[in-house]
Length: 186
Image (cartoon, rainbow, N blue to C red; front, side, top):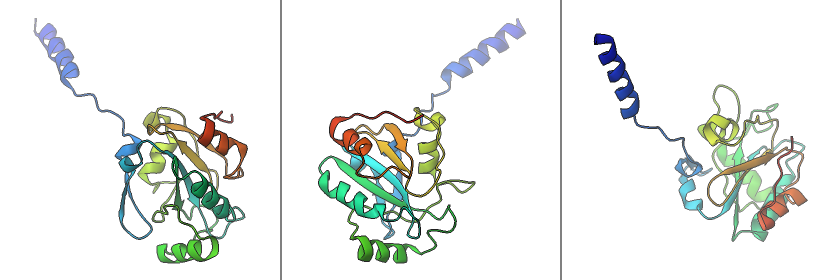
C-alpha cells in the first residue's frame, strides 16, 4: 500500500508541475549600440533578419546591401545587426567605434545592437535560441563566420539561416521577404 501511495504521489507531482514553455523570439530584450533596451515584442507583424556583423571582414561590404534591403522593405522587414568579435578579431572596436564606422562608412540606419558573442561559452542568449532546436523548435545551427543571417517570420518563428557568403540582396533573401518562399540549405 505504501508503494502505491508513493507512486500515486509521484504521478500527481508530475501532473501538477507546470509546463515550462520555451522562450519565444518576442520574449527577448537586447541592448542597442547606444545602450538602450530594444524589445523584440515591438517587432510583431514584421519579418526580421538577424546578422552578426564585423568591421574588418571580407564580408563587411554587406553592410551596404543590408542597408539597401532595409530601406527597400522597411514596411515589412527589420534588419538587426549584432557586432561580434568571434572570428579572427574582426570586430575589435567598442560600441561607439562600431557605430561611428557604420554611420560614416555605410550610412547604416537599421538597428544596430551592442557587441555580443555569437558562439562559445559566453554566447548571448538570443544566439543560444537561434542556434538550438531545443530552444527555437526548428533547427540546430552553428554560426560559421561574420554576416550569417537568421530569418524570423512575422510571428516570431525562426524560418532558417543563410551562410555568410549569401548576399543580403540575393534571390533567397528577396524571395523570402516578398513571397514567403525559403528553402533551408542542407
